[in-house]
View (cartoon, rainbow, N blue to C red):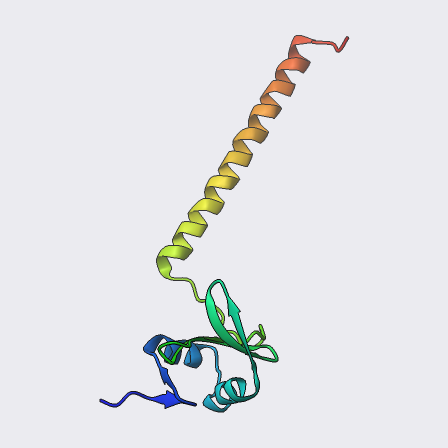
Length: 120
């Protein structure tokens, strides 16, 4: 099995998956490598070209990941069934806590009124 490369960099499986998810074309990546600015950060090296960021491992000549930078190009995350259930449960628990707090305040106010407690 031959490894796919682009502009002398080997495409990792992670890179290919992120590229597909984020809708970034090979020609855009090639342009970023050719015309973009190579930046070194704590996280490693990346080519920046406009809003596109292509992370690379310079020493091993490997493409690591790609970030289009444009939120309109990013895919929306779909929640798994378990995540959705967990969020619904958290919402219900929060609503129940608010109801308990509200009813205990109402009970206290009713007691104050019934007992004729006056403010000094």
